Structure formats: structure tokens, C-alpha cells
Image (cartoon, rainbow, N blue to C red; front, top):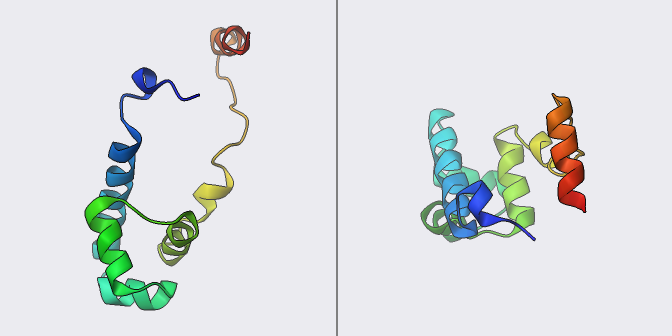
Length: 97
């Protein structure tokens, strides 16, 4: 289970933050909402809803990431964590118990 106190954000806040970053990146790349919809095969209303609310299907989010050349981030989403210090390793082992 996710410890929300440690990440500091609720899931809906994370969704909105991802949508905010996508919109910022889309605009920086000069892509309109209509063009994003065309490139992803999504409806324009779905793109708009995502940018306003953060609500989107996982497959549609991956399509958007592909248009923005960021789909590789999903491939590394749940990879085992690499520890930088012995303390981080020991803390992680304690949490497993």
C-alpha cells in the first residue's frame, strides 16, 4: 500500500501535476490539443479533459508520452531501486519486514 504521508501528494494531485507537465511540454513543442488528439488517435475532448482534470486511461497516457518522446519513462516505472548508500539498502530491507 502507498504511504501517502511519504510522497506528500494524493493520487488526484499527482494526476493533475502530470497533466500540467504534459500541457506545458505540448505547448513548448508547438503541438495544439487538436494535433495531439490526431497523433494519438484520441478525441479532442479526451485530450482537453485530461489537461483539465488529469483523468485519462493508462493506454492513452502512453500514447501522449509517445508523441512527446517520453514513453521510455513507463518502461522504467517499477524497476528495482538502486541504492546509493548502505543506509538506503538497510532502510529498504527493514521496510520489507
